[in-house]
Image 1 (cartoon, rainbow, N blue to C red):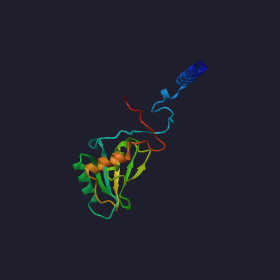
Image 2: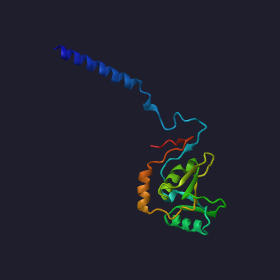
Image 3: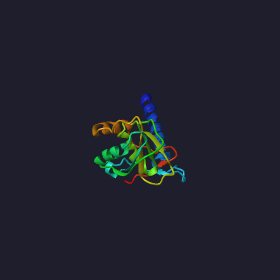
Image 4: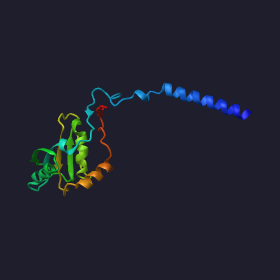
Length: 171
């Protein structure tokens, strides 16, 4: 009989602790924009469909016509290619993706086309949603659709860069 009384008292005490924890919980009201400094940019971390992604293709190699060739490949995949240009500064990487807060989700998608090997250059002051795709001397070719899908799975969901906060998601 004493064991039942002890178990009953323990059950009542546990119930009181659970109720107190639920009443005092502050996480229930935490939202996407709360706790974010007002002067930090809001990053659009929505993973975009390729037809909604605007890009500039930049040749950062000595290979003539590379920007036009890769720009054509991106157009064939329904990307919105804005410009195809060359830059004087040559890069050794596969690619460098330059973007601002409005281009975070787009840059994440584009990174999959380079199998995660593209370097990311985030600029918090950039105000457009265009991603500059700078091709480097290690670039060979864009990934296939299957490779892109696998790469997106490996990369996970887009995240807000350091010094920014994700835009609140509309429900």
